[in-house]
Image (cartoon, rainbow, N blue to C red; front, side):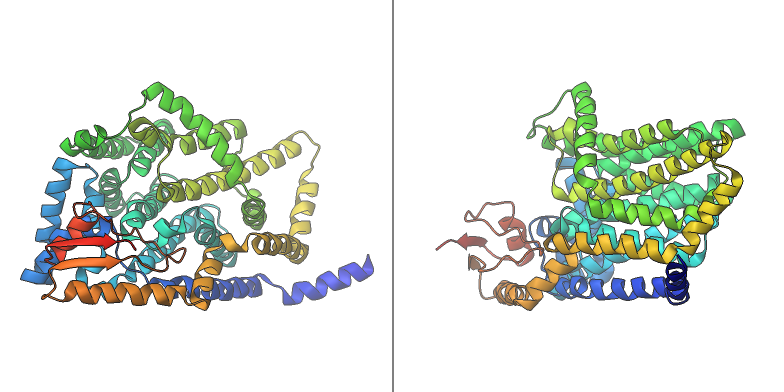
Length: 497
């Protein structure tokens, strides 16, 4: 025991919170390098052209200062003929490639940057301000969760390297995190400023015009906030709830939705709700991987010191767990109802990330509830509680080593599924560079004003996780026509050998 204590004491002097944070910062930077490098080899594809026609042509013919003319025109066209998600349509029309093909790399930078900023703001309100946790612990938790989300998201192609798919979901998830941070600041930290309320109102209206997963989830969260504020007779959340409902209504009632819906199989709403819970159970099972559980457990242990002075009573663990599961399951309802499916991988990315957030909240709450129960029943005295906290604090090094070791093992076993590994592989084997060269050869042809009839050969490489939805062998394809209009071609067609 003396030998063990000596070893732990020596390790504690070296492996401090400051050094742990330094290591995770270095790891974050190193892992981001291949992901961001690959972004420079990405190119627009499919819907990027469809929604970028008007803005690209306005910039080309009238200059960049008139770009919003193209945006408004795109909004009018698609709202009337295809979909009502007004905020998303505006984002789609402003994809980086409309300002120049060499700007498309900004897609990945924008998605990763916005997600990080939003997570920082949201978790700062929770961990740093509400739970009054040490800043170093806050940064460790933030970076651990951020890396987990980026590295393990289900569909990296559509989540990080394709503007249309990534902006529709990841950007609105980031905006929702900002909204949650503002809600915590107002209703749990008591900072009820006019600026806070204005920002909340604007964010809610924007999110309501985005994808239906975050728009519906927003309404559920605001409904719960209204229930929570009833005891304080604070009616300010009612207006926020109404803005959310109105914005979703404007999106859902768009004429274009009827056109789109006619092409898709619709599901009975009751059946859609029931199946949402079934899918919620299934995804909760397969998404709680050993690595995910280890990261959530590490974050919870980092926050263990906050239980002693927590403002939360932890009296309703079952209710909290059920609410968290219901909110998560509700994310499957919109597409089940509208399309009789659970949607594409880009949608699963935000479901996955929100699931991990809800799982962390549930895990933290349940452990707090168990701790309080043991103390109140006398099984676990306050002295024992202090002993447990001291035990975790004094053996934090050992805990970090054990959990980190199992995390490293999990990462090694599943390394092919990690974003940084897969991006590094296509950089090493030259597939990303080859793809970039072939796409640039196509751009030269498209930008050549003397060539009006364009026949492309198939790309020889499709490096994962770079997104590419190839042109079609028929001229009238929805993927070919928009690109032809942007570059003023008679037609574009894919010729298969």
